[in-house]
Length: 208
Image (cartoon, rainbow, N blue to C red; front, side):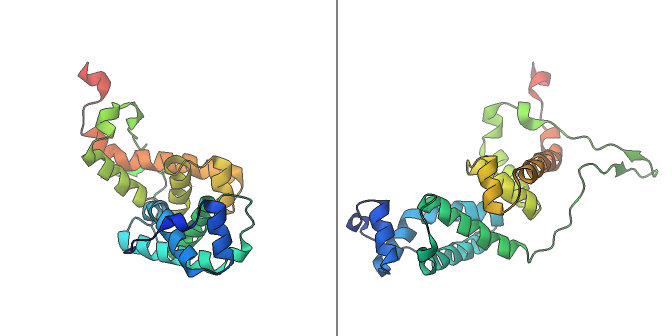
């Protein structure tokens, strides 16, 4: 989405912007888009895992926000409200997808028909510089995008967007305990998905 240059100085602060939105000023909607688009797009991209679909979620979010601004009661910040709308818009699109989920507890069957436990690499102990290089970031992003929607959404909100578990639960309309369970499963699922990648690299203990 291309955003044209907009003079944000017309509104002194978020409250002034909010009043403009409530008065139905078109310029206010444009200012809201300009001010919050990058943050909304970021969470949409992480949840959708696809730039085009993230763009569609971004558009859905701001169209819905401008239409429903009268329902915004200022109990949270405008940014949090927009994130909630973005999450809901993303979830609506994600529900249309069908994903095959592999249980992280299920054993692996060998060619001889024997079951062996899944060996999951604990990559949390790898050096920070190794985890932050471009290649590894790309692998992590792809692994997150491959998570089932119920796990990916809570993981993105909790671990990447900085919301508390309670806040993530409220945004997803689930209990805090359910959010904790999903977050735990997401972490384990990521460890399983990333095991083949990290198993091919030398662990820090082995390098000593």
